[in-house]
Length: 159
Image (cartoon, rainbow, N blue to C red; front, side, top):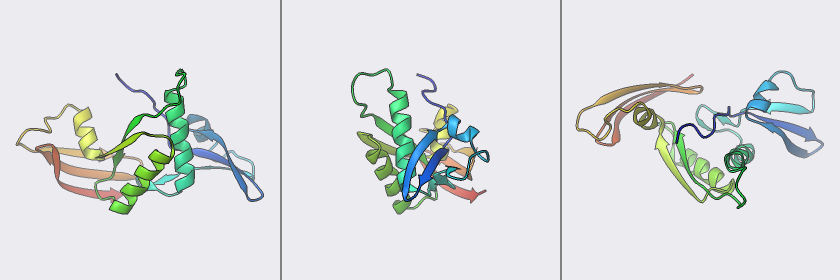
């Protein structure tokens, strides 16, 4: 179906005393980076491919889910596929899954970033021959060897 949503992982937060509220998410929040007044901070809730701020990440995912379903009459409860770095720990993966479920996802599937890149590029991931993928992302660069529907070997460099 093509690209459903293309938004940066940025959230603008207004602080008023001990209260925090979301001002903007995605492109609108990215435009605010470095240009906000003292009580508003534009932050990236994901760092190096993993969650840095759980509650803000959950609000960001909730916004994205609602934006994709904004023309729907029903409360959205989608199945969500999220890419994770190859070297992410089980704890980091659980945090990502819990954040998406808390944001309203019905089911959450995790896929390693190089595998998603290989599938997107149309590489023969199911065959018994290897395909090398270099995925240069915003927080991590991953190099992976993919064969038989799995990542055989991977290295990840946080940049």
